[in-house]
Length: 234
Image 1 (cartoon, one colour):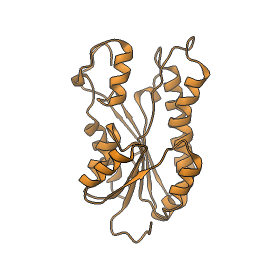
Image 2: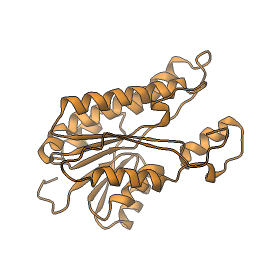
Image 3: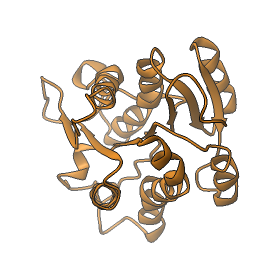
């Protein structure tokens, strides 16, 4: 994928749904998009709706597939890590595989893809955006395995920012957001799902867009977003 493309290029993981889809729509007016995810059909459909987008279907846990796909990118202006999982559980009941699953997707896959794409990011003086979570700043009962992975993601972002001064690195910390992941979490909590309690994915995407479009001398390092009206469950 040549760096001679007339528009800046952005790769968005988790683009097939939720916040990732909203970020793709927000950046579509200014960027050439690579839409990352595992659902090829959904990615292809989204690419067909956007002016300059290509599906990039890759399982981020398949290191060989990721390395092969990343090898075709020689310049990258923006990398948005939106893919993630939320496997919850109290410490007394969460088995080792729950912790490993969160860490593998939310941290290890992020670190490996970033590592592989560092030459392309450096070539463009690029920007890495990590969709973290309120759980990356505050751990609550029953959320330990997920929170641990998001705290680790915060540490990864801080280390990357310090090690790569030629790049911009932004951590976004949204509160609970109206996504399919959130629907599954609320179902597990055994309560009715009320979308109005949560942030809209478009609100998170707007924060990403603002960070990416900041003037060259500005480095937006962290953005915290919360719903304006919080219930006892948010």
